[in-house]
Length: 243
Image 1: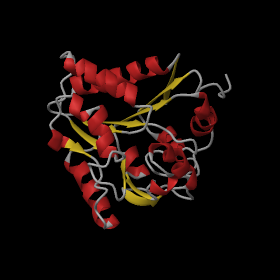
Image 2: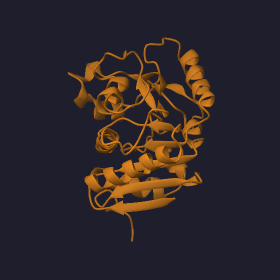
Image 3: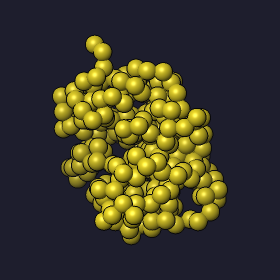
Image 4: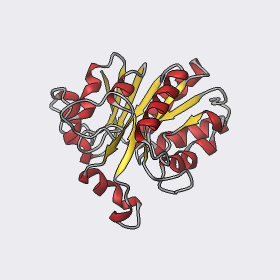
């Protein structure tokens, strides 16, 4: 693992965006695994600006997102498709038909899980997967468990995740209780992994996930076994790591 410490969120966003842009410049038809949440927004702002300036061209690229709430359609302003369209897809020159997010409106979990796995394989696999990390170590919606879920699946969200996401909804009752998510095996099959972590509130989990034992009780710890991982943390997120 290549763990890089930067001063602040702005530096983290630029460095991560440079890595993603370099991937697309080197391989124009790259398959980018993308993530939602507050942390990637600065990265997407950089990529949108560079695309507008002609510095990076997404016209041949494809994307696959980590996850989507079950039950929300594309027009719902809390869906991850809506988030991605707002913060990235509508701001770059990517072919909308080559942007992919799990279908939250599919009622059959097995059908959607198999479809999404087949789609990723059909695209040739993920060239680089962008990840954040939850306070409990979840990646995507792979929550702490007694085993690592391999493939895309439907998951029941934990109370901690529901609580963390309630700020985006009118009330906690509106927060979906399930989501479709890439599995740990799907994430680990990406050729490269890029993880970004910011803030003192993530310091405990950074120390546990990247410097502790690999366990499904801390899902993100599995990336210690990936052959090509870059983790970018700001100083606050690294504050609990023993020097």
